[in-house]
Length: 248
Ligand SMILES: NC(=O)c1ccc[n+]([C@@H]2O[C@H](COP(=O)([O-])OP(=O)(O)OC[C@H]3O[C@@H](n4cnc5c(N)ncnc54)[C@H](OP(=O)(O)O)[C@@H]3O)[C@@H](O)[C@H]2O)c1
Image 1 (cartoon, rainbow, N blue to C red):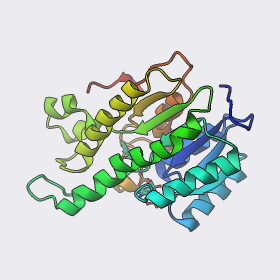
Image 2 (image 1 turned 60 degrees about the vertical axis):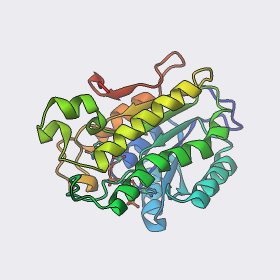
Image 3 (image 1 turned 90 degrees about the vertical axis):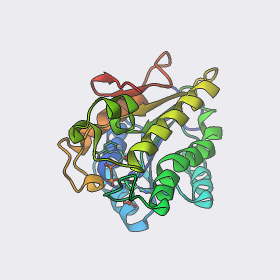
């Protein structure tokens, strides 16, 4: 991938990169020789992740970033411009479940608000703040971490909780919402070089699910790394897992 940013290196920013799948996405992109911004809201956890990545040979830098906070996101865009001279790839990985159980008959408005604020509005907030930087890249890519539980086709095909997750009025619908918003971005940006796609990592053992997942964070990161490194004639507005396209 080439870049028109002021630095010759490809630069990526990964949100929620201090642990779990986000950390492994940062490690995977760093292993390609890219400069990687580690977006994280907690100073200690962010610095620990940056140091671990640097010890593994990654050109990593910390980016203080709370995706629910306008000022934090605006500051992050300024910092990325200042430290890296631009941005080629944005991976919107940060996400929360809002806590279980969250059956629709019991979910609280506050639970819903928190999840949508992070998983949907947070992605829009970060994407729009980073777009001026991305537009200057020759091959800009945006990857939004969704989940197969956001697929209404799958949700309505089975009640099997292994493939659709538990009954959820906040988390799963937030990913459906994110899918829909991502399609609209792809429509608006179709005449630009920006490719924007959705990734599903599979059921991964992380804090998000009390480490009940069956895949490693590294395995979960692979699809996001693939979508971050798409060729210029690659897809946009798509919804992918390792095995291929996920039905909406
Ligand atoms: N694990 C799975 O099986 C699975 C399946 C499908 C999709 N996903 C998606 O994959 C993504 C990563 O999840 P994970 O499993 O790696 O979970 P995780 O280990 O809990 O990591 C979530 C990350 O998001 C960050 N985050 C949460 N709210 C944030 C905010 N307001 N601002 C900035 N960062 C914030 C967390 O930071 P803190 O450390 O500060 O909390 C953490 O770094 C999520 O979008 C999730 O929905 C996961």
